[in-house]
Length: 231
Image (tube, rainbow, N blue to C red; front, side, top):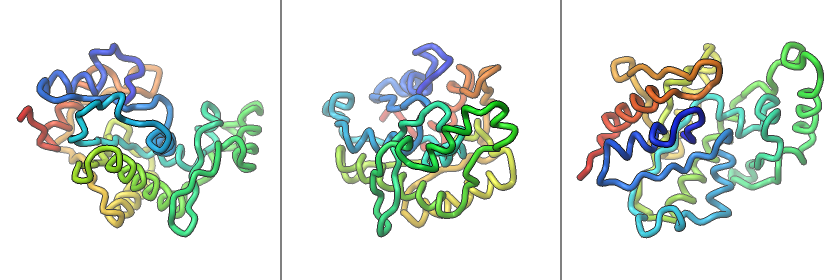
């Protein structure tokens, strides 16, 4: 969503804007982060400077399975973002608990990341479980609440499951299915693309970001799936 690896007019937001010229498209992507950072952003900063008077609209929150790791502060994620905001559940309420680097398991993961061959000796931790999926769904639900609080209560909030970053294992696929069930329980609108709706979404060679062609094709998929128009 942020647009790493492509030109400014090739990002997903730019492609959407080119196809929907009568609409104001705002890229709220935060590079290298996850739902936890976006929630922190909404709780501490106003959308008014970027939205202006355009408070009526749709927030499309693009998701893939690696973002669960970022909510829980996995070892891999903490290798580049140790001061990411950490959220916990207290009586089913989402509570900010400081940066991950102040949390003792995170400190241990950061230490492991400094060891030689750490990825070989210590595979990514922790293993995602149902409590992690539940927390992720609750964080996303709180993002929706914060977004509607700053805009209009009848705006749409949609989670799109990005097929460019396919789940690599049966467990990852099951985690996404479990998250979708949890989002439905939170009354969060979400969309999953079928094989028939798919267009080529190539990743930039040598890294893990979508290419310019992928952004162009994904914009078309979103417009068709969400029935977005210039009207």
